Length: 120
Image (cartoon, rainbow, N blue to C red; front, side):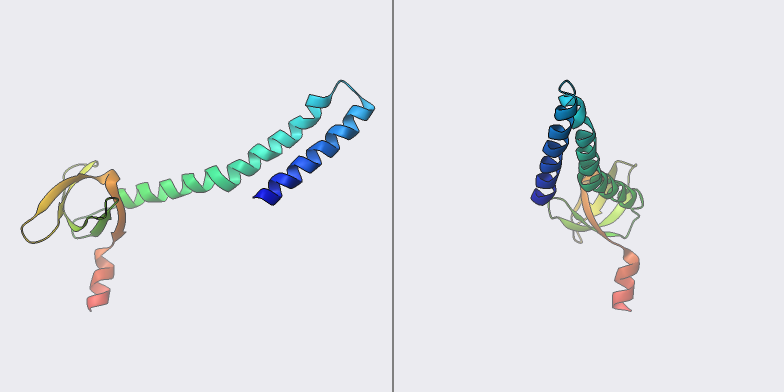
């Protein structure tokens, strides 16, 4: 990432020097294409992958069903017992303990199909 920033800085200064030699009033306009290029690089390397990851998390949370083994972001392991609505679900921690959590706090899902495949 540092290399990319260095290359962008060098090329921006080269373009700026060439342009000001020809037209002294257009120093800022020569930096505009480099700024746009830099913003595009930031978007495709940082913002877009985060959006994809968030979409996958939302999809995974919306496909929860009773019997799925989950791990919350707090590290609590359990099995989905009942889905109250799209934002809340009841998790069975052990034989006697159940708790209601927000579906947004689910960090990881081990699908019940995978559990059956391991045991079978």
